[in-house]
Length: 148
Image (cartoon, rainbow, N blue to C red):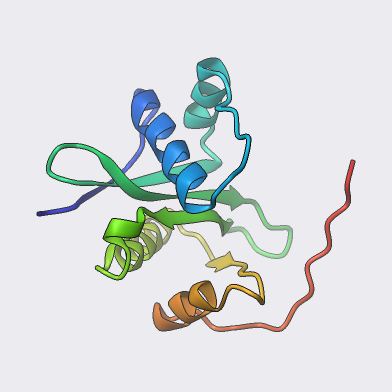
């Protein structure tokens, strides 16, 4: 079966909802409630958010990613943060995630971005190994959350 990859456009609300469903399953999100269609539509229309999907022959979303383009104060080029990347279990280890990274990198080069970065939990060795295998350079940082 062939996988196709595409950046979601403002008319792709059904694909975005399917992608969020992939995130829900892969990340095992308990008690998750899908945001409203109106809210998701605003995300699709936001030029600072980029969604890519991986589709099987039947147009089912089997993986995808969400990335944020952020302006930098240090140089006149955006930085890109991969917020989510997930592939359905049946499609993992078949090159889908790797190709999603390549699709994003190509998009970013075409838009003059400075670099792409992503974080992985220290406990998630699978994610660390994946990002390392795709050419990511590991940095030792500590992430802090502020609960509001």
